[in-house]
Length: 225
Length: 42
Image (tube, rainbow over all chains, first blue to last red; front, side):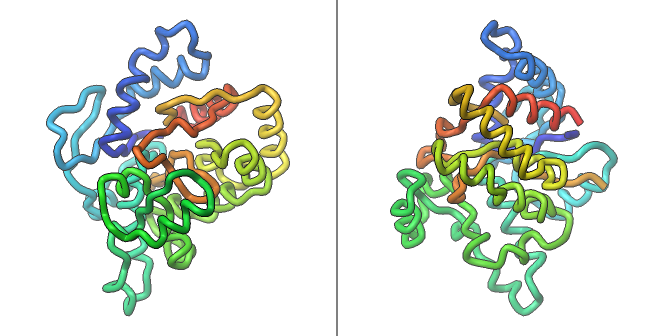
């Protein structure tokens, strides 16, 4: 990665943890290494209100597609988007761009891509679908309703924001290993499966990794990305 | 041209975070940390 594109909440959460994570004796070697990566990484923090951001961060007030494309055209490793609200914003732009012309004016507003759940169960999901009332909480707990309400391909078929809905990430999300394990251990799976392309992260190896994770037990951690 | 990739955990039913933005549902093993670190280092 050459840049972190983070929402304000995600930036503040990570900035609380990673700057000193390598000084913590409890940190594992990968965490120690990531602490260094995190500190040095150029960051863009998207916020309408934030006045100041440390750790090599530049504050950006809003997502301007042309600006993002200009960033993309610069050389370097890929750019990582983090944060539920920001991801929703990127997806909204991408959905609009990839929609057929006649649909562009009907591209879903940002709020529609947010939902609220009391948990990860079906009941919560259904009630979230009915709830269209915007609130701060809605914005915090965003979900990929774009993927289900609209066609997945319209978001991820092609284009510069590709990886947000690209075939690679979707395949990873849907791979049998991660889906089954996630359902069984709490319906969560990993950053790794999104960040890895489907070709490099085969279903078989993913199942093997999942078993390792199950057998070793798992530790909840905040601010992992 | 570099790509924009989504670097987040997501639940199978499509949630990034809890109702209050909490990420306490995330389960991160050592191996996963190693994977995300090596991905970030590229």
